[in-house]
Length: 504
Image 1 (cartoon, rainbow, N blue to C red):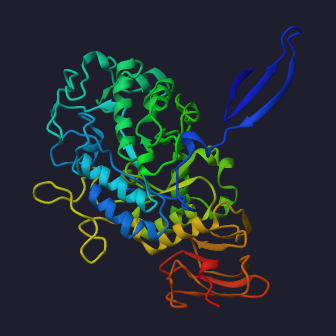
Image 2 (cartoon, rainbow, N blue to C red):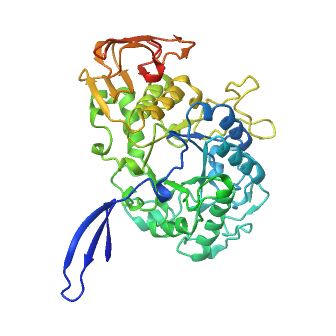
Image 3 (cartoon, rainbow, N blue to C red):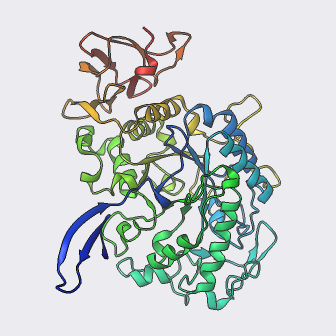
């Protein structure tokens, strides 16, 4: 038997001996629910939240007190390994490894293990942000007290020496794969993953995270690693820990940061055999549309026809910790349009959605909220509200109610697509839910919702409270149609109803 990999499928050819002729050819599609493509969500959950720069103890509390009750399936943490301490403590110091010791401002190894235990216990998975492409760019001391001798190429707490890195050169040509994958990004010491020793040290680190209860990894800067080297690293990682409630032989979920907007030598498709991919085309185009630079009506073909990856391997997002620091990208600072974009992401069936939960910042370098001793502050106050400089977008009603919508509609198809040909759209998810958007002007139309007759609460403007709506009420008639009213000056530019928001 001969197996040939073609795109996202395997071409299997059976060849008879003697006369040597092909008996049959069969295309077998990769099952993305298996191996490192399985997010290990519990129940019907299917949304990730990035609790950026949270302490492990606070994430544990959030899993127990909020995430489990509002449909979130997993948390992406900040990098858990020791990082270089930089002046003024900017956010990017977390992406400058000094060692693989689990000690940062978020907590130590015991704190990390306690977090995964408590989150797994309530059905919320933990994915660690794994920074394994490089080591720190400067000399100094790490958060566990280890020494970074970056200029000399010595990181003794691993240990790595000069021979474990590529020769020093800067990335200056994204049309040259060798330059992108063998040279240094922002002077960060670039590890030589072709060396077995380097791969083994990284594997040891990832295995320790598995032993500590993680369900998977976000691979930072994956496109700066050779795919064959990264594949070997992922293959050497052990199965998930049964001691933390995972089934035997389950593999860690892997999703990779491969920024591919087109026109570069390194492609996202170079890495699709390794794991899922963060689809950066998605966030860039969705941000552009909801900012009003393109028409909502064009979203009718949203997904693979836009040049995106197969939906089974795409992790999608409106913004992340990098994109929200790019000038002009849609973020919490444009709250109405940002909520609309997140609502669309969570209403649409394409990809595995990831919600960003950030802190307020005035400049692109600003680090997370801290006390006078540079310790991280807790995002959730004693009154169970978000504060201390954190934004907590995942706690916005317009976001968490759409997370519940996403879980409710599952993989049901889009039906009853409607558009005014410009900046207003609406669609159903089979006979389960309905959403409408206006990005310009008043939307006043009788639209087919696909829902049965009754009164429904709009879960964007409010909630269902003791059989009553705290926000808008939508009346669906016998034929499934309803008068939909979304005014340009409304607080929200989106309306959403579903079978669980029906009150009569």
